[in-house]
Length: 477
Image (cartoon, rainbow, N blue to C red):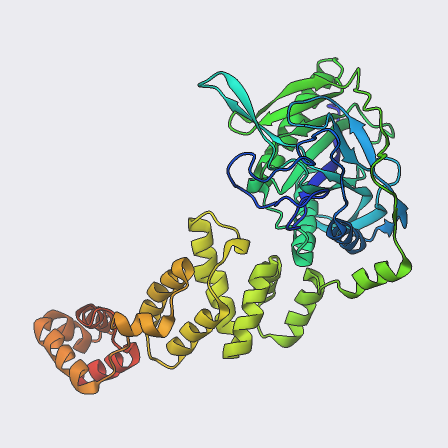
């Protein structure tokens, strides 16, 4: 009988915090920027420069820890992790090994088998490294220190996940929670959320863990899912062939859907951690923790419950809208203006989601204002524009956030509901299409659809469909 294997997965998730300045200096953390322009003596590791801790980093780390049910270490400190690499200008990274800020947390995820708790071993604060840019044309590597010193938290899970689906559910829960806190935008494509996957396999029923590998270079949920499946299969194949899995760090190539070894962990590097002599320990009072607790927002689960009571919209719509804080904010602000939750939900679930997918954007990238969406809904509901025109106008709102009323007026998109003008156009359509008229009068009621279409075409889509139908039926009787 073939052996059955179980996958055991733990994650290390790095999240860049949304502070305006770096963790130990006043340089900007803005993404982009010309290479080495967001730098100073501290974040480029110049001799004699001294770090000063950014208080906002501690507050974001505490907020995330509390949201993930962690205990806060009220006495915590920074350590130096010593290693040599061109993107690490000091030749050490300031991190937290011995006393991290948060410990013993957990998050609840939805799985195929129901709810499941994933333990969080710890969350620690640290600084990011710079970025190496490999120029294959010039056959050299360049270093950009803009990212050096950007504040990170590293969220280390327990090895509690058993499948790619559970990993994605866990990551989505983390991302949504952190976005609701506004502690990070968690954009995987910009590197502000990065996950390293520790994975091993063992026979079902075994109590001992197998040998694990760590996979890096994962910058999308789809890549993470593919990497997990690929690595699981690779390890099972080795075991089935009687081999042994080597503990190593592997790099996932998503284009080739293949991972390859980067470095072995057999002779794991000794980072020679020691307390950072330039930074004093952090003492966190009960009052400080309480102040952070009092500022915690309404999270997705609470918001979804409230939506069920307050708004008459489907549960599926609620789950999609509340999955993004930006989407939920747009929804609530638009409803507050136009008092029509069902229509707002329809526009977000329909046209907004379609355009986001088409443009390969995240809900966080939405730029249109609730005021403009509310105005569009009001104009459609009052018949000032018809639904065809409304979709055309919405595309402009989505891309350029235009003033709806002015755009409709300037482009003469308002509904034509002057009965005289419409009747004249319809009489011509009826005269020009005797066959359709005969079909309708012979009992083929669908023929009126063709005549309505011809009228809308003649009126450039701006006629009031209700009035067109009414006049046509009068004329055809």
